[in-house]
Each structure stands twice: as C-alpha cells, then as structure tokens.
Length: 308
Image (cartoon, rainbow, N blue to C red; front, top):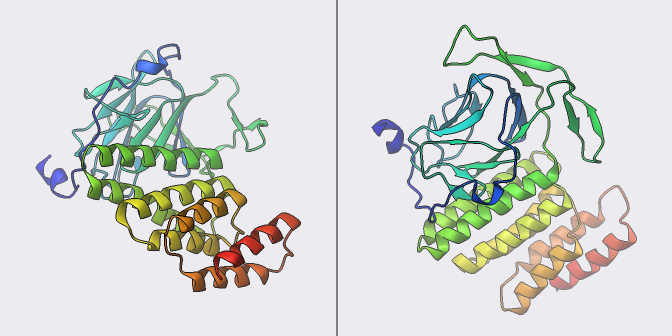
C-alpha cells in the first residue's frame, strides 16, 4: 500500500460519523443494483466491482485524490451489498460522512464520494428493470452492451454492464454541491489549500466538458456560479468571477437571472469583474443563430450593464 499512498495526496477530512445514522428507515441494498458514476451506469448482479484510478478498475475514476484501487462494491451470497475501503489514502464518504470502518452495508439511494466523484447506488426491480428519464417517465432499460466478470471469482457468471448514458442533470448538481459541502468542512477544520483544490477540480472539469460540446443545464450553471464565488471569497482571486462568464461562453448560454443576481451581489461587495470579458460574452450570445427570447433579452441587458 506504500506505493499507492505515494501517488495520492492526502486530504484531511472532517470528523467522521456513522454513514447510515440518518437513514435507518431505508431498505438495505440487495442485488441486482445500479451504480451511477461519472456520467455512466453499471448493473451489478453478483461478485465484486472495483473502483479506483487504475485503468483496470471496473469503475475507473480520474483525479489526484483517488487511489489506484480505492474501494470495492460487493454482493454477498445472500444478495446483500456492501462497500469496502481498500485502505485508500483519502477514504470514502457515504452520504457526506467518512467511513469509520473498512466495510459497511449499503442502503438504497446511498451517495458515495470518492475523490471528487459522486457515486449513487440503487436497487433494481428483479422482474422488469426500468429507468426513469428526465421527464419522470419510466422506459425499458436498453440492452447490455458489455459483460464484466468478478475479479474475486473468475468462474462466476458475467455481470451485466448497461449501455452508458448521461445522468440526470440534478444528479450532477448534487455531486457538485456535495463536493462543495466537503470543501466547506475542510475550510472550517483549517485546511484551506485542500478545500480550494477539492472544489476547483469539478468546476474545471465542468468547463472542459462545456468546451467539448457537452450540454450544461441551467441548474448546474447556477450551482457552479455559487461555488466559483465561494472560491473567490476563499482565495481573493477575481479570476473565479471570470470563470462564471467563461463557463457561460463555453456553453453558449445566457446567464439566468439567479446567476446574474449572484454576480451583481459580488460586484456590489467590491469584487472586480473583467468587463471586457463580460462585453465579449454579451456580443457572442447576441450573435447566436437562434434569436433570444424575451427573458433572455432581459438577461442580456443586465449582462451588458455589468460590462459597462
């Protein structure tokens, strides 16, 4: 384990509590289950699924806070599902609380945090597996695109891995907010550098995705704005305010009223804004092929005032 720790920076964590204390009424998780992480989904029926930075991990995650083999999600012979921390450097968080023991049982709907990636686990209906789309409509699950065998038992039947598809936007918002809560706790416990590093990573990944053409819903833009302004307050670097406009530029979206209000409040408090960047964003959005709606025109007018 020495070699793993050498490549994974240590981030002090907030005080641990029992991860399932608030959820005693929920049902223990039993296979088959759905695991959602990093915009993809896996189905685990039996065996073990590994999570880590190693490309050979069943669920590979990126990020300096992730150990090569960080954790396992496993199914016992009776179908009970548990989570095991593989002596990782930075540990595993369940519903915002760091594990205080190596292995815990999982419950339906638990949210895990490894590095800065949120992982959600849900039970599946054994008779008719369905998924719920963004409109709340249940639709048949698509056929599996690949199979995965348990590393613990090479003779075990293959575990089905469904086709990858984007997660619902509210889930991504929850992931960013969970990381923000984690960073806030680190600030309170006297670890500002680690807090800034932890919160910066998902925001930078978000703007990279937007620049690559991935859609960024309005609720995620608002959440990212709040956290960017939090980083500005922590670091006193106004470039985090510029981040808000750069993100909207990359996603080619007009800032919503809630976003503009947050930025206006920051500027009223004395935060500096790169007005040339704001003006460039306004001009670029006005030149989009599709005409702006009445609400967007009102927001563009507010944006222009910020750039004056």
